[in-house]
Length: 126
Length: 106
Image (cartoon, rainbow over all chains, first blue to last red; front, side, top):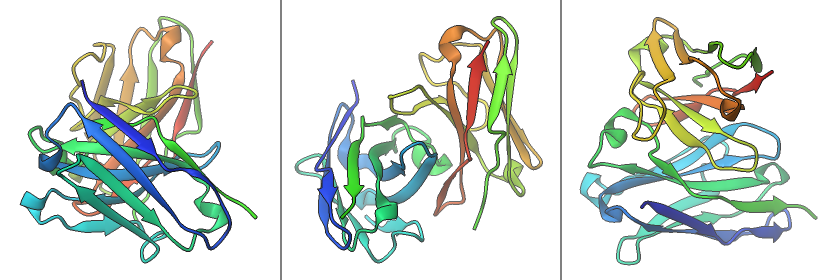
């Protein structure tokens, strides 16, 4: 059974930082592309960024609103994905979901997310 | 930037067919997928690669994609299908979600 468990959310002041984590199990983490997707309260889904598997270069891409402030990394030895969020703004307030693209299926190369975690809430407020 | 537009809401009677559209420039040239999100829950993939259903998704969910529009169809809609639905596409670098559609089963 695939499990994605996010942690690290909380209340932070504007300009502050947090590191979110996503513990993965039930699939070959090292062979997966991993993403962060966020959802502001009462709003729709917004892709934040992706890190490819090391086999595919381990490269990252980010959505324009977070580029330069957010950094995605992975530790394949711990089956864990990270999101370092810096220079937080009130508009970054959202539930942050971890999602996987298992490259043993077609998801990596046709662009869909196989599974989602339960999310962790980040609230940016003074 | 690329945009996907969905109707804000769709209402359907139990047992009838719900049709949700997703519009984007030349969307038919990309793969579209759909997620279902019930209140307080995480999204779940219901259609991928335009028309394929993941294991465990009922046959009443189907999809198509052509021209500028992808469509999610729920045949014989049940009360449990009441949820928000989001389309999503990928341009090989960026992932884009639709604006979301709330399906109400009256």
